[in-house]
Amino acid sequence: PIRGFGGVASGPAPLEQLHVRIRRILDAHVGRPLSVTAIVDLMNAIGACVVSGNVRRSAEIAFGAADCDEFLDLKDYAKNPRRAEFGWASNNSVFATLGMRYGDVVRRLVANGEPGLQWMQNARAFGRMGEATTRDCRVAGANPCGEQSLESHEVCCLVETFPARHASLQEFLETLESAFLYAKTVTLLPTHWPQTNSVMARNRRVGTSVSGVAQFIAQRGVGRLSEWLRAGYRHVQATDTLLAERFGVPRSVKTTCVKPSGSVSLLAGATPGMHHPEARFCVRRVRLPRTSDLLAAVRRAGYPVERDLVDDSSMVVEFPIDYGEHVRSLPQVSLWEQMSLAALLQRDWADNQVSCTVTFDPLVEAAAAQVEHALEYFQYALKSVSFLPRMEGGAYKQMPYEAIDSKEYMRRVAGVDPAALRGASAASLGDPEPERFCTNDECAL
Image (cartoon, rainbow, N blue to C red; front, side, top):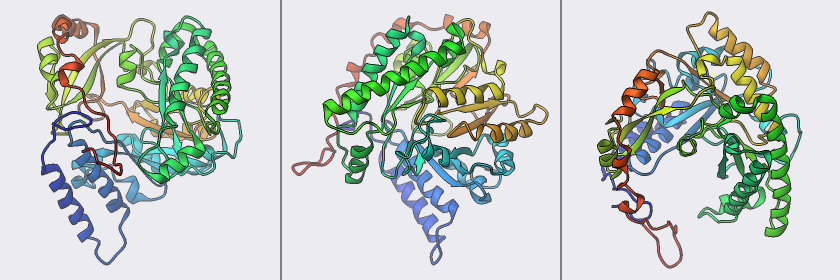
């Protein structure tokens, strides 16, 4: 058992494999600079090893030049078959420049959804789009899901809210105040890296996110969404001013974002981030460590469990989901509408960034041209964006979401006994000790 954060150690094999991979990569570059491929290989190999720890998860993003064919082809496993073992460990995005030609990038992302695009000019020059600022001119990249641009050594600090779960705007504002108070307080805590502490002390960056956006639009419409977001943003700024004075720290350099969400939105029964659901009825796949005590409980409850095809240390559990009536599904929402919604959120709410994965049908005539034209228009309204081609059976196996029909949903629900989960409480897993990092007296391992 692992002290500190729970779980069971996977043994020395993943670390041994990592050292073999690193030696192989470095030996191939003796006497010459590391190539673009070698640099990304190193970080992906490390990420794959971290995932092998059963409990720890790895999130990486690799940025490259938009005119570098070597970088653009990293996720093309027909050209780079050996990278299939660990290339999945990072999202790959290019540093796009305003006014560039997008054809070469689009040709790759239409095939497999990568690379994404990050416009650093917009990230450095604007809070919410249209509100020019020089306060955040040092940002050098973004976090792996693209909802926060970050300086070197900076970490993200995120908190999530669900406007569709509120009966009134006033309730939503009260939630925002509590959420921002929590996140701002977290920025007061030091890390074990002096460089990170220095950046955080100066920026106090927070990402207060909204999720369940598609449900809010179905309930109240886009006009009311814009109204709530603008009012919410003003309230977050007022709260930041009050807390900064009370805590004796600077106001946060940026305060709001839209994160993609995942497990957190599931707990609230919300659609993830700004995204529409794959369908009203879906299968949601969740990964659990192979050693998790929860696996026996979900099997007893009747949920399908299968081996993770990518990570041998994990298992995949399938949960049936019904998002309810009136919420439009992705096939009903065009590429242009998805990007327009992202632009609205970047204008009215997010002074950081909007994590937006635009789903499109690559088999539609002139799909690549549509993506390219959309990028030409929306490059002046967004800070980042990624794409996912909708393919029969999914862009890859064991996708997080898979559309099913009502008959399949009812069949799955009929085979589930939620009462079997009642004995699987967190208490049964023990109480993990909090990490203390290294101190002068002891090092908690």
